[in-house]
Image 1 (cartoon, helix red, strand yellow):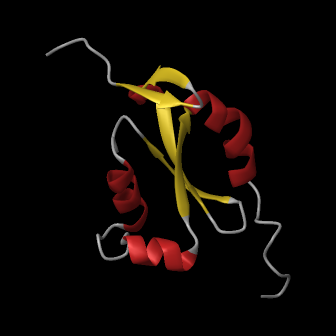
Image 2 (tube, rainbow, N blue to C red; image 1 turned 60 degrees about the horizontal axis):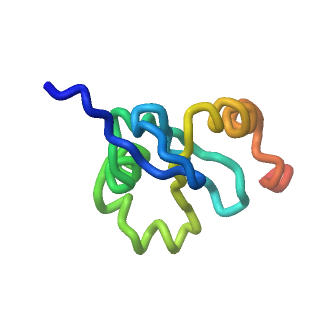
Amino acid sequence: MSGKKTMVSVGGEDVPLNDCDWVLWNPCGCPRGVAMARYFRTEDAAWLSFFGTWKAASLAQRNEQGLRVELMTHERYSAEVFPLMTGACPHKAVGA
């Protein structure tokens, strides 16, 4: 097995894919989920990990629901996104 790392460009910087996470964002801007890029190496694989079926992860459904996926470093995820995932979405209407 080769020791060569798969590198990706994230925020203009080349980083190892294994040091990245895919973040699923709701239309409101709140994070909904995270998948480790070391296990889900492509955007399609990340979508599948979030929904479990290709039908649910279809491009049409993604667009209809306003969801998006973003690749970022684990360092950024830990600093910026994880804190947002530990609380409730402030955008949801009370009593909805």
